[in-house]
Length: 323
Image 1: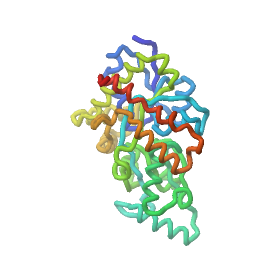
Image 2: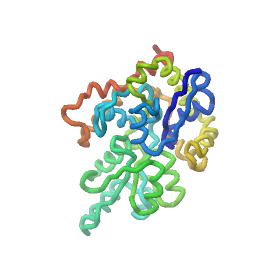
Image 3: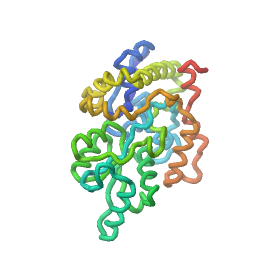
Image 4: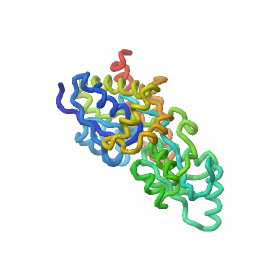
C-alpha cells in the first residue's frame, strides 16, 4: 500500500466517482490508501489542494483554470487529468416568484422588467463559486432573453448544501447548482426547476479531478493508480443497473446525507463516463476560458496557453489504456 492519499469532495451527486471508488474497493485494488474528506465549500477545497492539505479533489473545472492563472487567488499550477461529470446542474427558481410549474427565462425577464418599473430591488440568485460552470449557465440562460446578469439581477455565492435553506428563507430567489440540491428544493415545495444544464449548454465541462502540477510530478505512478480507480468508479456509477445502489451510497451522512430517492431523481440527469465524457478535452478548457472572458473574469494579459494546458488528456489516456 502507498502512504495515505487524501482527496476532497463536495456533497454533490457528481462526487460519485470518488465515493464509489472508495466504497467499492477500487482504490484498494490499486494498492492505494485513500481517505475522502467532505469539505464545506469550493474555496476550502481550492485552498487545501493548493497548500497540500489535500492531495487532490473533486473540483470545479473553471476554478482549476483560475487557480492556475492566479485569478482570484495566488497562482498554483494545477492539472485536470480526468473529467468527473457533466449535465448535473440545474437552475431552480423560488415558487414565491409565481412563474408557474415550468418557469421560463422569458417569464423571469418580464418579472425583472416589472420590478424595475416599480423601482424594486433586484432579484438575488446564487451560484456555487464565481469560477464555476453554474455561474456561466445561469448567465447564458438569462442573456438569451436579453437580461444583463451584472445589471438586472444580483448574483451571490453560496455552498451547494445551503442553497435550499437560502431559497426557503427568502434570501435568494433562485440558484444554479449541481444535484441533488434542486431535487431537495422541489421536494420541499420551495423551488421549481426552470432549466437544466443539458438544455443550456449540453455536455458543458463541469467537475474534474484535479491536483497541483507539483504533486503530480512528484507522484506520477500514484496519480495513474488514482485515475485507474476513478475511471472504474465513473464507469460503475454510469451503469443504469447500479444507480439504485449508488443513490443509497451517496445518501449516507458522510457523503451527501439526503434521502436516496432525491439523490436518484437528480442522478437521472448526470453523465459520468459514457460518450467519453471522462476525457478532459482541451476544447472544453477553451469553452470555459471563453466564458470567463465574456463575463470579464480573465484579464487581457492572461496566459491562455497555460490555462489550456491544465487539461491533461494524455494522463487520462494512459490510465484508460489508450496510450
